[in-house]
Image (cartoon, rainbow, N blue to C red; front, side):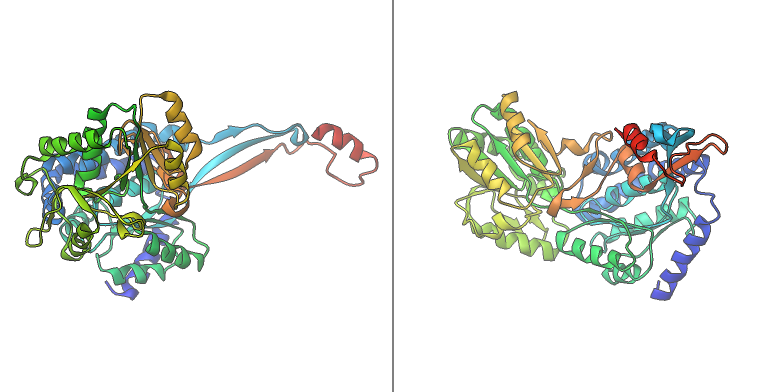
Length: 458
């Protein structure tokens, strides 16, 4: 499509939205049904596309992309009637004769800009919220996952007319072309720097935005943690999708008393989950392309390997790697890694961990392993992050009833479940007053009404 074509598409969607068809709850439910059926019918093709782009196994594709989408759609369908209902709100005494409510209305035409690391889930999960709220939408997928982009175009093209839901091509230039249009809402998932650019573009028309970004999510293992559990869950959370997960543990802070034991358990756990040679294990994914591979391969020399450290450019393979002895100014500790490399940093005092975390940008996630509820409460109360897990990793995003989003440099806004519906809805305040029954306080002449008004407002 050309810039002119996208301008026409946006106008087409706005015209369709103004017909008010999408505001009807049965229409939204029918659209969600069509999407769920399309995903289920195309499960094999979608899994093959994810395998071609990221080397994902069928199990990983289902649990992190296809299955989680179907679960999200079920939650939304089962609750949409309730969520969309007007909410009564208390009315103060000085508005006697009136009643108040919140009415949820869709924004209109929504732009969803999706990344490449979970190219199906992170394109369609926001779409579920946009449909549930009654919007039209254009999805801009990533060109770095071309097979999934094509599969996504075929899926949406089969399920919906383009004046309702459409998928653009994957070129980066297309994002710039779309940002020239006046959307009613923009939902972006991706890197921090481009997120700033999205926000600048949105400011042109004062378009509201949700930014799902990333950052360096810390994982802390205290000296009282159950180490086998910590090792297993950290290895899974870090190396799923070959570390290309926005909420993956980005660095590991481990108490010096248990460091050597935990590292040994993690070595064993890597073998347990991916075998002696992960390169030939079908459950271990690949780096998305050569450019990202070269960036990550260059980081392998920035520390001393505790395990892994090998790579193969012909296969875009980087072994699950633990590194130590890392310079504080290394990109490993200043930039988001987004790959299967985990820096290991020992500590002696938990307050040093808290200080280290708080001196940096607020992360998208925080993980803390401890047997003590008191210590867990202390960590949550003295740090800030988009989400958190105690004694686990990544699972905070698996609960569709919890909002998922960042804070500060890791993003703004949230979605999943009811929060998705509310994100893509304008909460419109409505006061309905009785035509005959009303208070005289607000009308002049005021005379001595002020003293009585002050009593009412106390």
